Structures are given as C-alpha cells and as structure tokens.
Image (tube, rainbow over all chains, first blue to last red; front, side, top):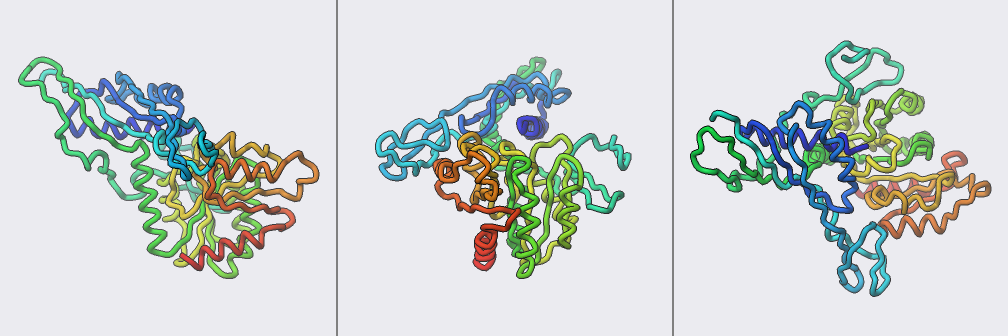
Length: 118
Length: 276
C-alpha cells in the first residue's frame, strides 16, 4: 500500500504550493499516472480522500490522466504499445525494448480558490 | 502519542539499536535539518490566470506544477547518494519478498567481505530488532529502522539512519529493505545498486508477476539452490523470465545455507568496490 504514503506526499506538495499562492482551498488536481508507473489510480483516489482530510485539498477533485505504455524496439526501432515491462517487438521479436512512455508520475497542475472576501 | 518515549509523534518510522532498549529515535522531517522548500521553485508564476477585479467573488485559477510526485524522496535520495560518493561508501539496497533469505545471505557474505572492506548495515522491518541482532552478532555496525505500518524504506529513513551509524570512508553499506516485492521498487534510497533476491521455494514466474521490482533491479540473486531437488522450480525458466523483464540484470545462483555460489557473488561485489 505505497499509495497511502504517495497520497500524503501529493497533499503535502500541493498544500505547500497553494499556501505560497495564498489560496483558500484547492478545488482540483491534475495528475499524470502512466500505465506503467506502478500506481493503481483507484487505490490512490481512495487513499487521497483520507490523506486530504482537514487540509486545503479536502474538497479537491482528482483528475487523472493515464498515458499508455509505449515501447521502442532496440533492434528495429519500431514503436508499439506495451502493457508490461517484458514486451516483445511485434516485428522482429526482440526483447530489447526501451520504455519511452507510460512511466510518468506527475502533479501536472492544481486549481485553487482564493480566500473569500478578498 | 508514542508509547515508548511519550513524545507526540503519531506512527511513523523509528530507529532502534539491538541491545539498547532505551535507544529510540523517530524519523521526522526536522531530523535531517532541511526545511524543504523545493516544491515548485523551478516554476515561475507565468501560468496563472487572473480574472480581473471581482472583489467579492471567489476566484479560481489553475497553477502549473509539473512536478514529479516522488520529487521529495528523489531529491533526498540524491543527497544520500552525494554523501555516499563523497565518502566513497558503496550502498546496496537488498529487496525481496519476506522469507527469501536476505538476512541469511548478509550473515554469510559480510564476514567474507569485511576482511577487505568495512561493512555497515541498515535493517528495515515493520517491527522488532531481530534482524539487527543477527547482524550485530557479526560485529558490524547496524541500525534497525522499524517502519511501523510502512511497507517500504524511503530516503528520509535512510538519511536519518545514516546519521546514527558511524560509517567509515571507503566502506560498504548494506541496506536490507522491508520484505515486499512491490512498494520498495518505487523509492530510491540513494543506493549504488538494487539487489533483488528470490528463492527456489517461490515460483519461477515471480519476475513476471512482479515486473516492476525486477525492472528496477541491477542484480538478481536466486537463493536456496540447495533445495532444488525438493521443489518444482525451473532455474532456466526463472532466469529467462527475469531477463525478459530486464535484460541488464546480473544473475547469481547461491545457497546462503551451504555457501554454494557465494564466492562468485563476493568476487563480483569486490570487483565493483575496486572500480568505484
């Protein structure tokens, strides 16, 4: 369950950014979690709601973009979709496949609400 | 509140030393003396969208972060790595599921290795100092990290533990992670190499079932090969599976019990130490 410690670190990072901006609350969070990043988005959402309790991000909606895994063959250079690390090139059957996309794990942006009455 | 020292810390990791029941250090942010204002400092505020002068309305704006979620851990891991490099300390992160023989392997290779290089150990477990006691019996400096509910070691825990260990220059640091083939793969500790251990009492498809760990590792050690006559474990198949996930893996076959294969492993580590 490393999703819990990850949820906590996301809350910490976005709260610190929101405070820097003088925000009253955080209403939205855009995350990018590649399909090969080793994170279960559903599990992260579940943990996030617990991790965000009592913080500026308590009401925030999580929006998760999940880029597909893409591999590049080290022999013939072909690019193709991969869902595992042990992908095989569909053309030349080589196992020397480099992952070029799908491992992203980013906080893309946050949407903040200014404090009321300003 | 912490039951042992009565401080206000809730949960979290604790450092312990075998045989010193009153030694008890909480791993906290302040223990590494950095206020960590790194977040977002690489980005200016050019992405914000102001909406004019609506004085009594709540204003909504989107702020770009484009920040790696694991940035904080990764930055601290790099600090650990820099410290190790400066003092020429070679750190190995040992990873496996529980019961594959990480501690037994360390008990066997450390006495041989420490003839040529000083060795220290960081032990990670949810609870107990059992493993640290086994390592202490070898006469090497050791500290136990109890992660409590945590399923992995992180760079902050290692940073705190390193400060409590008297590490020598030009030494070898073995970090035994929490027994878990999933979560520890994501957390860089600042090690030079990740070592994954599997044993022949597990399935030979383990590298395919837990590919992230094998993908991240630099070395794979197959342990308990003395038991091969009694189990249905296909070594060739397992090695092939591991290589499919990560064709850069260095592969070793050993028995921590009988000592078979440990000479080759020891020689490989010693060569790495010479080349650093």
